[in-house]
Image 1 (cartoon, helix red, strand yellow):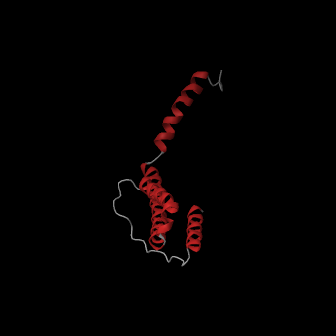
Image 2 (cartoon, rainbow, N blue to C red):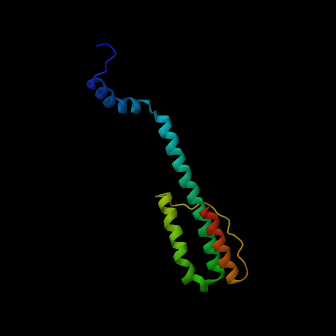
Image 3 (cartoon, rainbow, N blue to C red):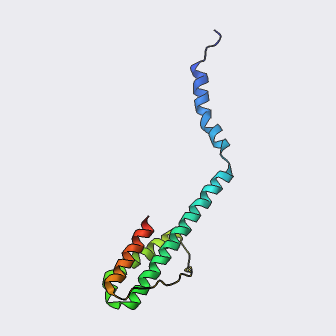
Length: 118
């Protein structure tokens, strides 16, 4: 019978398809993905450093807020460490200007958090 495709041919083709697909993937594609992942982690770590600086400056200006704000600051430190494990140096971040009142300072932190989240 001509034009007939046996099960053996179909199963053989199905079994070798993943191997052909894997051979088509180049290391440059995987390198590009790794580079974009690294860049994303670095960007997130930089945002975290900015938030940490904002919390630090607020806590220096308003030490009475320490009990309320330190847990949030510590979460950002932990998140930054997870983004760039083993990094001991902190990128230089310019300390933000902190509003004169405590309530305005807390509102500024909220705004910074929302901005970082989007």
